[in-house]
Length: 314
Image (cartoon, rainbow, N blue to C red; front, side):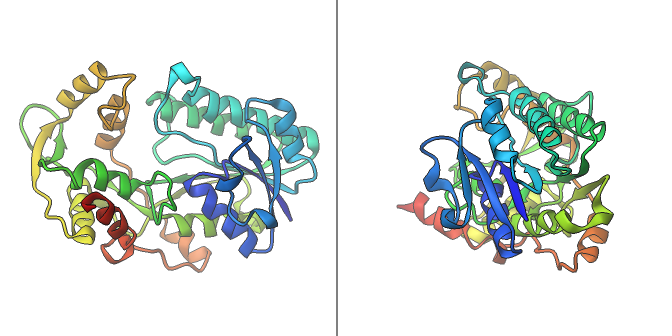
């Protein structure tokens, strides 16, 4: 089938493109002018030039498609560049959903995020708004809520690579965040890192699984790991010894507010808030239903970080 893929040139999108082709589908990608080099196997894809805020480009992308995947997402806003959570997570998603309905394309898959909620951070809230809009549509929808994703970044931004560069490789102790003034439970916030290839396989496979229609799937890896364990695993993969320092989350939030609008601090107040909430889920039933043995977050499966480490040492 032909699958309109929005967000096909980023980290997750590159794996979705590969998996669509592997499973015999034809990806139709909306790409910005000049981004052709970011497309995986472009000779096997149908490329439509335009942006998500152009209704005509969106309509042309869903035309002739049998299904739609909306995978556009950002982790940080840049208001001065008109890059916002609401514009990309909700407005863009809504525009694609409406276009799909108008074109008679019924199958729709939305990449959301674990932990979304109506009263959460702007990131969580806008993802939740898109879910709500999709649920009230006439589309045959499926929503996936992944935890943090890891895997070879292919030159793009990726969870473990970013933590290595911003924390583990730095000549200073790694922050072990905690609530309050006392360092009780420092670094204990948990996540369920899930490999991007597993996510791609499950998401693309759901295109033809009728049992997935009308379902919301939380999607995490096989292990719930603490922030401290994640940093130590990245250290093991790169030969770096990680020294942790208990760090009050509220203090980093204050600094993040002072440096808002810059890239001096690699995290935002909202990212710290979401980290402290934790990001775990049990997707064992989903993996079994798809016949997939999930890839664990361990040093062996973070082999791609050795290249990042070599770059830091050069």
